[in-house]
Image 1 (tube, rainbow, N blue to C red):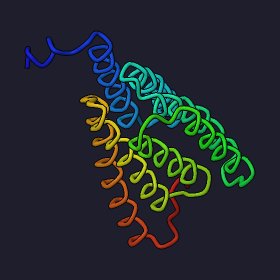
Image 2 (cartoon, one colour; image 1 turned 90 degrees about the vertical axis):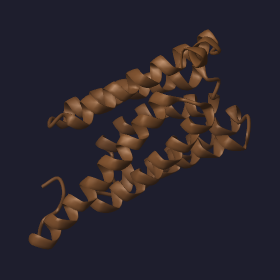
Image 3 (cartoon, helix red, strand yellow; image 1 turned 180 degrees about the vertical axis):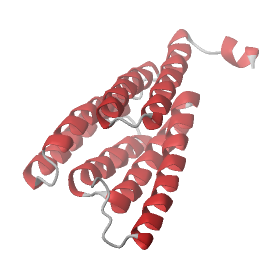
Image 4 (cartoon, rainbow, N blue to C red; image 1 turned 60 degrees about the vertical axis):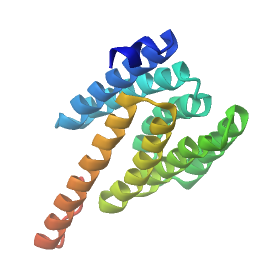
Length: 182
């Protein structure tokens, strides 16, 4: 383990630290029962993720992560708004095009598309399924760039989503009129 760290550049060490900080924010956010605090913690996690991606020189992922922060804010205020969602998708495509380095940049782009459509258009189980696909795409990107904290964070998001989907399914089965968020 010490040899592994010794072989890392300063940027890679800082990227790993930022990934672990993001993991901490994700854990704190998903453990929190207050939605507003969750959003603040998720925004903080995304700042750490953006820095992590920059240290790993994964520019498409870094830029699209900055847009995730904008998306979280817009989707909360304009849920279901097609023009704003389409505008956000267009901005994501332009940013991906401008920063594209390799075929692996398809992972953050896929994550951005899944996340944007999910957050603007879906609720409940469908939202969590689509966000699970986004987390999987982010996780694959983190594996490719070698981020331990980022991979663990997205793995935690996937597991949390699966558990929440099961809980929501059981609630809907027990209470047919139940809708998430009500």
